[in-house]
Structures are given as structure tokens and as C-alpha cells.
Length: 535
Image 1: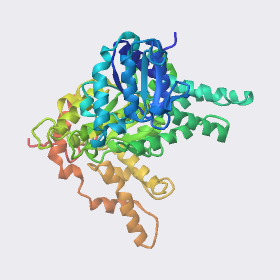
Image 2: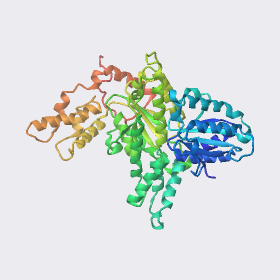
Image 3: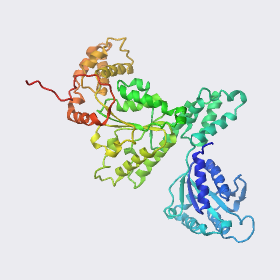
Image 4: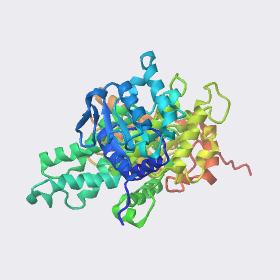
């Protein structure tokens, strides 16, 4: 048995609402044509005749044929609907049950100029449920905005029409391939490319997916998921509630150390395969990285997107706040809807404790932080999408306890100061980022690692450009161990300046989080307690 798409499920709900004599539906969608096709089917299944109305052509049937051009004025159209609902007789135009899909009505309901039209619509919403069954009428307002006039809030049922899900995208893809000549069909999506092409288009509208597939077929005679994925960047820019970030080149291999965390992330990759979906394996929800600043938490977030081949989106909760009442909450909910629509992606929330400040204690933000926390917690607990949320935090004491509960994140990780082998790997990786091969020049990463006990990863990485400045000033020669060690001597590591804070973090993480790095039994760093021999 073929499962129903989300749009088909919504259409069934609409049919039930029509049979229940719901007189006013407010459908939020940018895809007018796609939503209308499903609404036509819903009206037919409920025993109604569907028609469309717009200010350009008046009333038309579902095929687009104009029936009553004289009703292009919205007040005239609403007046005709009222006459049909009250009609007693057998004239075919009036003696029928009708659903009216009003395409352009929303702009006519605002401001003093729209007061009369708004009142007519409100009167209809109150009177239509009592019309005889044989002349029952219902109005469907199609609008890209969910901002229903307050006067209609008690009458209108708002339906947020979903973007195409995987099943619907797959039908769009199959239709595009079927339109090809026979010699191109077999090569259009080879070697599992069909599933990749569907995944790449999830989050696009039906028209956007069709256009991307058509462009790829015209240019390459096959479906290229990369071409389709590029369209998502434009979608994110259009919504202006999320930031698109380029993933880290090299993926997880570019992150020095953190072997436990990297192994866990690589094991979760299989959850996104078609076989995993068929098996019923749930998609990973996310991970919370808590630890010392500058030790690779943000770098890891960027590397995951590269390793998994999915978009990297940054959710900046503070940037969504607005001075207008209710707008902050609306921005956050819109961002979460976009994330759900995009499908497979990595959502990065950096320094989440700062965004949640004021949520658990008194604040002067009017409860905005508390509302944001509640919205985020509910979404993380109940969401069914394939977005992987990776949040970072430097100060665990500022995090609300409910955020750490199982079910919000799959795992909580502790990111400590790098071990000696991780410090050596960071030195080598930083040299490579500046086009220096540590094996081809006189550099010993292990030596640098031994001399930088207690340094954070960012402090170690910063030694390379500092050493390069010194070497360039000294006759433009190549960097040496001495240059790096001299640069290290001028650094007061964070493990000294924030010793008490790091000690508290370690004490908390010892029993509440998994270590991201493998233990190497290294001598304690300067941030650890000193044991004295006083015997």
C-alpha cells in the first residue's frame, strides 16, 4: 500500500472540515498552483464544486475557464457567494454546493479601505455554516502570509500548506525523467543517484524542484544532486532567519583529535541511507558539545556537514530577536519550519548558553528568552525531520537543566584541552592550512606538543602565523621549531587565566558527559590541582 504524502493528508483534513461546515479556511502557501490541485480534490471528495477567484479574471472553474468576469471585484464576489448560500430554486448556477478559492483576497482586508470587504467576509463566516446543505458554501483564502486579521481569528481555520515531502519530490523527479527520450532515461539517475537527487531537493517548492531537475537534465543529460543543492542556498537567503555556512574543507579529517566524538559521528552517517529508512532507524537528533573555549567545538560543527555531504545552517537565536512584540517568536518558529523543510542538514547553535540567558531567571526582555527556550525544547523533543542539531557551550552553569535531558540531544560531549597527540595533530594541520608540509620542513610537531601543555587548540594554531611573521622578517626564511617555541613563550594559555572555571567544568563533566578525546594518561595540565609531596 502506497503511503500518503503530507499534502494528501492535509487535503483529507480539508475535506473533513468542509463536511463539518467550516466556512472559512486560510491556507498559507507560496505554491498556489500545487495547493489548488489538492484543494480541488478535497472539495470533490466532500461533494462540493470548486471554483477560483482573482482580481484579474473573476470567477473561473478548475480548468481555468472564466465563468463570471463581472465578479472580479472582491465585494461583488463575496455578495454572489452570499446569494448562492441563500438561494431557493433550481437554477444550476445557484443550486449547488461550492468552495471558493480566493487567490487575491488577503490584500483587500487591511486598512480603512478594506474595512467593508473585511466586514462582508466576517458576516459570511458567521452565516455560511447555517446555509442549507444543498447550497452550502465555503471560502478558502490563499495567502503567502499566515497573518490573519484579528477580526477573523475566531472564524478562520489556518492551514499551513507543507512543502513537498520525499514522496512528492520523488514523483516530480520521476515525471521529469519520464519526459526524457528513451535513450536518456536509464542514465538520468545512475548508481543510487535517484535517492540523492530526492534528498537534495527536499526543502524546495514543487516548482523549484522541477526547475532544478530540468536545468540539470538540459545541461548534463542526468540529475546532478549538487545542482539541486545549490538552490537551497537561495531559499535560505530568501527567508532571512538562518545563515548558510560553507562546510569545512576536509571534513572530520581536518579536526585534530576528538577521536571518540569523531567515531560516534561517523557511526551515525548510516542513519541517512535508504536502507536505514526502510529498516526504521531513527535519524540522529544531535549533540551538545561542552568544554573549554578554543578546543574545536565550532570546528567540529563545520566538519560534520562536510563529512555527511549536507548543508550547514547556523541558527543564531539572538539575531532573531526583535523590538516588536511577538516578532521574535515568529522569527524563531519560521526558522524551525525552514529547518524541517530543508530535510537533511546540520544546524549549528553556537554558544547556546548566551542565547538562553534570562530563560531560567528574571530578565527584562518581557519573557522572550523563556518563550524561545520553550519553543526550542518542544521542537527538539517532538521533531520528526532529519536535521542534526549540534550546539556548543562554554559555561554549563548557564544552561537550563531541561536542555540537557535525554531526548533533546542524543549525547552530551565534554571537549577538554587537547592531549599531547592532539596538540601535535593541531600543529601539523595548522601548518598545512598555511601551505606548509610538516614532513618537508624542519618542524617537529611532537616537540611543539610537549612544550605546549595546557594550550587550547586555537592557541596552538595561532602559533604558526606568529612564527611565520618572525621567519619572514628574518630574511624571508622558512619556519623552524625555534620560531614556534618562541611564539609559544609569549602566550599565557587560557588554562592559567581561567583555571578555576576549567576546574569546575571538568568536575561537572566527569560524571555527566562523555569525553570527546581518548585518554592518554598525560601529566596534568596547569588547570589541574597540584599534588604536593610533604612527607
